[in-house]
Image 1 (cartoon, rainbow, N blue to C red):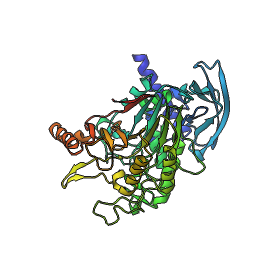
Image 2 (cartoon, helix red, strand yellow; image 1 turned 180 degrees about the horizontal axis):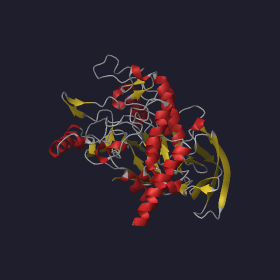
Image 3 (cartoon, helix red, strand yellow; image 1 turned 90 degrees about the horizontal axis):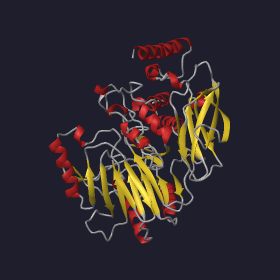
Image 4 (tube, rainbow, N blue to C red; image 1 turned 30 degrees about the horizontal axis):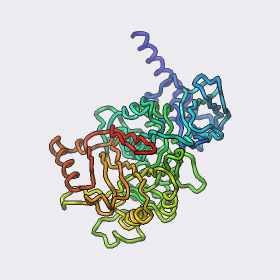
Length: 478
């Protein structure tokens, strides 16, 4: 034990000496979290956006700030010992990309597990594992996650996903980070403190917040073990954001467009996402002939400002959550002849009545806040007789299983789809603000006010695993 303590103290002192003699390109408040054994790849690695023959691999290199560029080697193999290397290369990164490295590896084989790693000056990173999508497969498992707030709790749910060998893919539905300053939305009593301490606004702020999250041991582990597909919601920029602003953006915080672009740039730098020429995040992935996985952007692509139900333009056709181009793209994707259409969706589609001082209320930041576009999509599914659609949704910090129609009736003959809403990884549920009895009463009100809701859990954190085969989809709430 004494030897272990000496090693830990030495490692910490070595990092501080390094920081003093050669300032590292990392926020000084994060130095204490660095694991010297991982240097200079402190943030681990990640893979994402797999297709049947390609995958993004990612890392970040933390170096002396005097260095303006770095040449990083990479290799990908069929075995963890790298005796069968199938591809390798070198990627140059720089300050312009916050020294993150992304490689779009092509010409891979479908439904194959690959191992990958990076190197710098003969120093190797940890080994990551990824998997390409199948061309033809009878079953597939996806873990869906949402709302991981650093200050609200530990990321042990990510560790649980990492340890589940049956999970083929992780889809993160948004709120991967939160923008708030210390103590503004969380519980700092457990010692998990946001860095930087203030609300993030600038490009450097957003980069630093991602740096904090990606040092978390459980998040690092799940990225090491599983390929990710991600989309952003509001907290990757600011609370209740839309194309032209956000509830949590004030005049004294500068220009919204500048802040939004900074948030988007940091997101693309720090996550293993394939960037498109069209600068849009919505995209789709074919899981063999089994499923078309459709990933939406209901936040920054085409969303108009939120209103109340009493607003004159509440039902106006000009109010959109997707925007015309994305809506057209979506319905074209839904026409594809797949066994299943699975829509990765940031905010509740519903219908879902909430409870409030005025009785039943709608969630105005969700699809029901945009009734024209929502009803358009419901009627499209009805008219086209598309009966294989499953929405999987984040954002709401509660778990639901519900049937989708226009009004949320008990009648099942008018259902067009089902929706599974995943609870949060850590963000507050109803029981953070209410007693046990009050939380149970809220749960009961959800069930009583929504005959289309078949399951509700408003007190637990976790994730869901969607198990897909030709005959059925089974969803486990964990």
